[in-house]
Length: 265
Image (cartoon, rainbow, N blue to C red; front, side):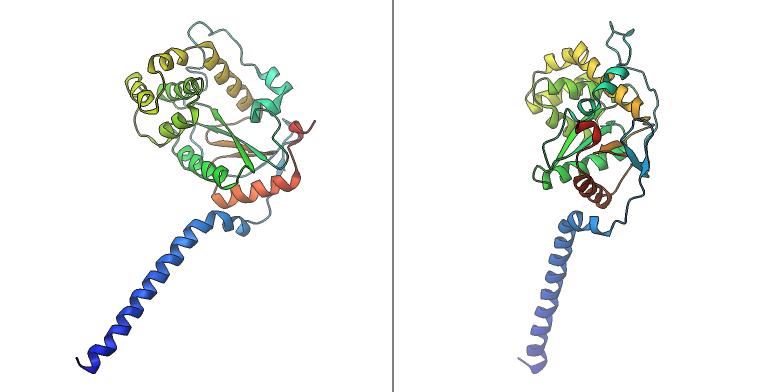
């Protein structure tokens, strides 16, 4: 073996080790970024809301527009029932967050549509945030279908699945899937997840699901939402796409500021 051949081995090994080190650093940075990116977000420019009082908002990104703000909201025999805006205003903490959060927990209300591409991305970010928080963040998912009949079918199916304790599984599959929410697809999805498909399809058209959709519509009207996605993080309203860093920084800001006023009385 020549001297040249001997000297080439350490060089090749060194290059290989360097590539492995770079790959490991890249992987570590990818996993760590959601945790550290919030430190690169500047001070928020909050704009107080006149209505509802006690809330504020920040500028955000793109939204999916509203194709039909009322289509599919009512069950067939309930088309004359009004949107319960006054009742939601009387207990906005419950309407938004399902009640006051435990001490130290930042509540987030997420309003989304299964046909909204921006919602798919934001839902993943919120789910990751909630999981990483170790109980420090609590998300209330609001079905707010705006984008046509299949949006309403998917929303009704998710709420019907909730009646069988399977909301999280349905929500995740519908948000990640690319299939139209036809009765046939929903039956297959119900079978995959392990819920009663016949009951699911029946509950979708029931009074309980219609009431929950009306309640969400009422809260969305109170805040003047114009499209999805929309968030209420503590006392801060965010309409449109938002980065992981901004969400993380906003959660920490809300944690310092304490519970939203509507949940502290």
